[in-house]
Image (cartoon, rainbow, N blue to C red; front, side):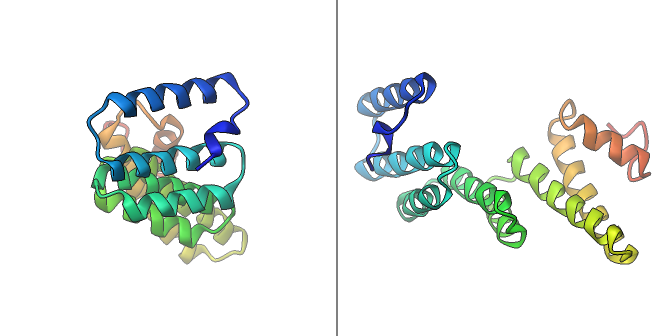
Length: 172
C-alpha cells in the first residue's frame, strides 16, 4: 500500500494527507481503514492509467469492505476500468453489481446507457437494425432512470431521447 508516496501532483498529495488525518481521528475499525487505503490507492493508480494496479487495490478493498454503499463505489470504479479497456460485458457486470447496492448511483446508470448506446451504434453500422433498436431501447431505459433522479443532468441524453421519440418534450 505504498501508492500514496508515488503521487506527484499537489491535489493528490493534499487528498492523501487529508484522508490520512481524517482516518486517524475518525472512529473507524482497522478493517474499514484498510479498505479505504486500498480504495484510495486504487483511485490514485486509476487516475494515472495504472489499471492493473488499480484493479488489484479495488479487489483487495472489496475483500475487506462490508458497507454496501462503499462497496458500490468500488464496483463502479472497477466497471470504469473495464469500460476504458473496451471490456463492456465485464463493465456492465460491475455497474449492475454497484446498482444492486446503490440504486441511486447516477454515474453507473449513465455509463450503462452509454455502453448500450455505443453498442447500438455499432449494430447500426453493421446493418443489424433489430439488435440496434433493442440496444437503443436499453440505453433509453437507463438514461431515463438517471434523468429521473437528476433532471438537470445528462442534457445530451435528454436531447437524444427526445429526438429519437423515446420521450416526449414534457417528460422531464
